[in-house]
Image (cartoon, rainbow over all chains, first blue to last red; front, side, top):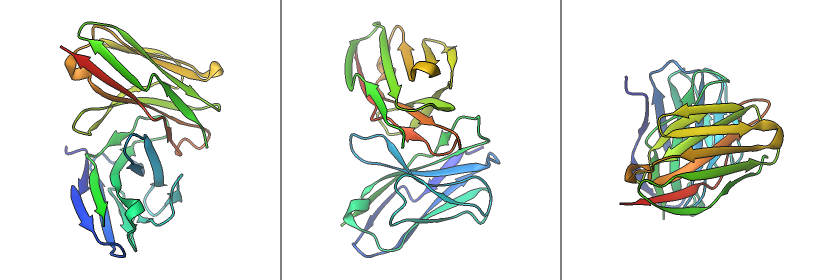
Length: 112
Length: 109
């Protein structure tokens, strides 16, 4: 039982490049989340999903897109990376509305 | 969104000391969680506590939802308790979580 995994762990992009971050969970959780964490700050919600095929915007969705084609996977896409998207990205999942979140190890992204 | 304020922002303790961390939030919530981010960046669940009191070993938490605050107590602190403690809250739809800026704890041997 691996829990929540994230791929890649670290990535460097040039401004304007695109990439996809993968989050996978093996706990059969319905809800999945993408957050970003900037230095000295708490996490901010980018997008979330309450089930396979559903997505919704969080607090800071601009510049990101997501997809949840399979229940176990939640993809975060950056179509045209900007230096302001330099951050640590965390994925989380939980079983239901009254359950706690479980976090992945994070992806460190540097946009030059 | 919901404003979440955590205090103190920084805390230095000697090993064995006790501490209380506070989380204030600006609106009614249905979901409140406490997390510990260790020095390697990993986020670890501590408590799911929308109301009431819970205890887990040396840690306990109390949420008074009607007064919009939650407290995290750490007793007999250890160096492994170092890191940043976050409070996260969500309201009606249970999914838009708002995090505080955290309390950075440094426990010295």
